Amino acid sequence: MKKQIILLMAITIFGYQSLTAQQGSEQQGPPKPPSIEDRLKHLDEKLSKELTLTADQKTKVEAAYKDFFVKADKLHDKMPPPPPPPAPGNKAEMDKLSKERDENIQKILSADQFKKYAELEKTLRPKPPGNQPPPPSDKKQ
Image (cartoon, rainbow, N blue to C red; front, side, top):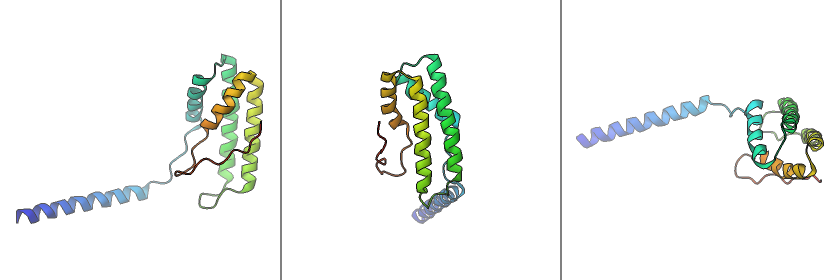
């Protein structure tokens, strides 16, 4: 009799936990992207480790990235929600924005700094969902 009561309690507790876990996951939407300030903070941490920027360079690089993030967020707001893949036109626009950003940053940094930046910038990109490898970069420098 005691074994049956313990078994019944265990089933009840397990059932309750799984039910609340399902309800919790249904109420949550997709994760929210980090704010521009969070992205700039992350960028500052990465660049500070790898590049020796003057205060003026740091300010200008942050301004270039902030402008990029604002424009990219506006572009992403125009895109359709996930199941459909992004339209090819949006990729071209994003590539144009990235090129414009990098040209602005190249004017700010020395040749050695920009070379390090170009390698570092690849690590700053968000990881694709799942375990897929990142898409090949077709940028030529």
